[in-house]
Image 1 (tube, rainbow, N blue to C red):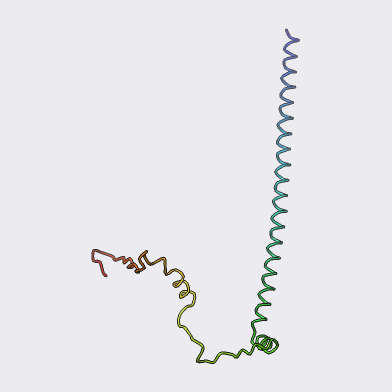
Image 2 (spheres, helix red, strand yellow; image 1 turned 90 degrees about the vertical axis):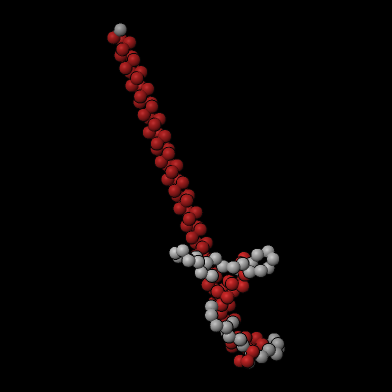
Length: 135
């Protein structure tokens, strides 16, 4: 009987050792896989950042080229080279608007959002504090 107890102990020890080897191996494999995924993500992020930087440089170069082509000297030279016969505007032809052009354009663009289907403008909602309602 003593001999079988000894074999049972060795079998349990062997099973526990194999379980520990498999468990530590799977943890090690998971760690290597996770480090690989981190490396792949870092490489793709680095590539994306370089593409973004290249696009920003290209946009800056294009902006500089457009600004150079919009200068008065270049426009005058192109007018004479291409024989367009264009004249600069006279001050009476220029209309100046007061206020913010962004707000004016936004109001024009969103005008249909504040009209009903019949074309009549809806009355604005007025919030009043207290029991009195002002109109």
